[in-house]
Every structure is written in structure tokens, then in C-alpha cells.
Amino acid sequence: MTGEAQQLDAHDRPDPPAARATLHGSIRRIDSDDAVRRAVDDAFTYRGDVSLLLEDDTVVTGYVFDRRSADSPAESVVRLIPTQWKADPSKQLTFRYDQVKAVKFTGRDAAEGKTWEAWLAKQRDGEHVNPESVSGAE
Image (cartoon, rainbow, N blue to C red; front, top):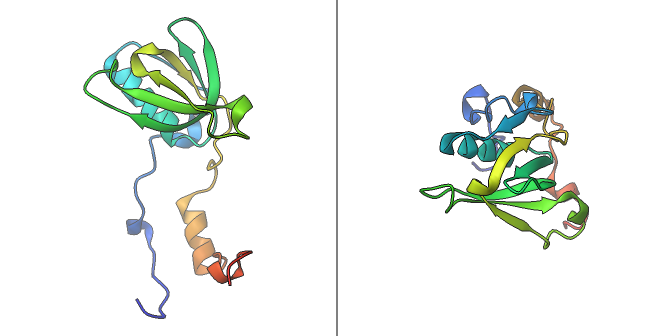
């Protein structure tokens, strides 16, 4: 597309993660392999902090930035940056899925209330970010 604004409509968007806006404050207790996969997937798509209750009753709170699902929970891992280390994202913790007993969605989802429709309206009204106006771009 040369020089033309791209037309966007509701058909261009991917489906949002299941009930992301309603996860805040909820707890997912893990009682099966499928339950741990769903809970970790939701924690990954959630844009706020989560608390993981581990099998040794340790609670770790932070931002889930990666998960790697394998054939079994013992081979699958979830990675997070603990809340107290957010200033240094190189400090990451990794846990196997089979170590997780529960997931609590503790932090506010940064994307909550920011719907596709609101974004689309801003694009149509010309409120999108111009890359040339970003500091440092010339």
C-alpha cells in the first residue's frame, strides 16, 4: 500500500483471550493437566501480575512473559519476572507446570477496558501515533 491508509474493520482483529477483562481477582486451582495449561495460557495473555502458588506452598508474584508447553506438565515451563525485580528484567524465574497448584490474577490487566472498538475509533479519528513524531526518530 503506497500512501494509502489501511482500512480496518472488526474482521481484521484476532479473537481476544477468553474473558481477559474479568480475570482480575480470580483464582484458578489446578486439578488436571488441562487446567494448568489453561491457567498458564491465561496468565500469559493477561497483562498484569499474577501470583503462582507452588507445590511447596511458596507464592511468587510477577509478570508472566513466556510459557513453553510440551507433551507433559513436567516438561512445560512458565517464566516470570517477579514484581520486586521488574526494574531488572534479566532476573527471571522459571517453574515447571507441574509445580503450580494455583494461579491468582492479582494485578490489574493493563489492557482492561481498552477495547478493539475504542482503538479502531481512534484510528479512524486520526489519533494514531505517527512514527516520525516519536522522540528520537528523524
